[in-house]
Amino acid sequence: MTLQKHDLHHEFPEFSEEIHHLKMNNNHFAKLFKEYHELDHEVLRIEQGVENTSDEYLEQLKINRLHLKDSLFALIRKEKASA
Image (cartoon, rainbow, N blue to C red):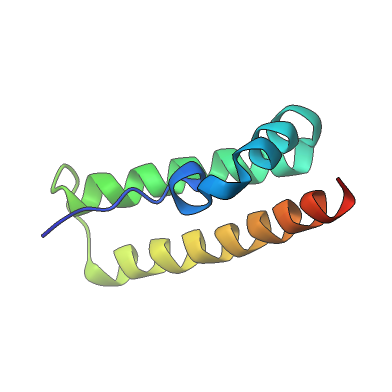
């Protein structure tokens, strides 16, 4: 099984400038970004077998990560449009 990185810079490489700008200048984005990064790290640790948990818990983490990514992407698109 190949584990994929899901950090925002891998997910949206074309928006690296906007991501950096938002992390530095938008507290809400920075908070969501931190939550997303921590959640992604936890999912990766579980997938690597470092942590054991139920499949249901892992799936819920992935759903939460997806919702956070959607919220972050909406903020990125808004930033891009206003640039």
